[in-house]
Image (cartoon, rainbow, N blue to C red; front, side, top):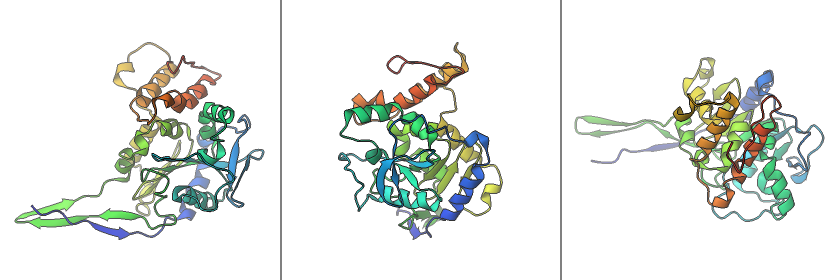
Amino acid sequence: MPDAKLTISSEPRVDLDLFRKWNEGCQQHDDCLPDEASDLERLKVIDCETRTVQMAPEKCRFVALSYLWGPHEDFASQPLPAEQTRTIEDAITVTLGLGLRYLWVDRYCIEQTSIMDKTLQIKQMGQIYASAHLTIIAAAGTDPTHGLPGVNQPRKVTETATEQVGPVTLVQLKTSAASDFQNSMWATRAWTFQEGILSKRRLIFTSQAVLYICQTDYLHDLSPGYNSGVNYELVALAEFISCARLPREFQSSAGSSRFKEALRYVTAYSRRNMRMSSDALNAIIGILNYISNDKSEPIYHLWGVP
């Protein structure tokens, strides 16, 4: 049987003005307001205009980047190199395109060779993403060299292709953007788990589309006008990102709803992958510390166990 022929076409670059419109609309919703960043200690950000790493100014509105480091990432050097990896370069472009100036990227905004700063920033990692004005999620590719499709490089999508085999017509269907995201390496990594959950607004770059998921809106750029109705696939994706579905084994168990939420996080997190087992607690400590600071119903943990 002959293989189906795939047709690859370069789409126009993404519409940053559209993303800016989405984000401005989201700012009207109280549910999507980020946490205050004033409690963050020694927070550093990239000034995308001067391309330097600096201490975050007071009341800083910053974008956070959630991405994959790759298998052989070296310790970062400061100041910011003139030539940047494609994903971080694209994130700078998107940040400026949204009308914002500051970007938080762990490899530059955490002093990777300082044990003291690294420990501090890992502990408050959950608060960093919860305080971000928006989080860019790089769900395409497997490392920071891939870039954000459609920003500085045209994105490629798989068109519908057909192949006739005797009386049978084989049709290759497109993979939905939601499935594309859920099957991405980003969605399997331990470190990205809390980054997706705690972010209030998420601009997700997959290989074929850009998704905008906040607390109230579920948008995409695949087809103009399609965002007028409820896209249940994106609603399900939002539940996947926020870990909103309670595992069956906990649905009838005792405990408060907040405690069950903590169990849900730990259960879902335990299915993620990490390169070093020594990262097991560090990669979720941000979200555990975040829920322990809930004044109405704090949930504490003992070495990751709620």
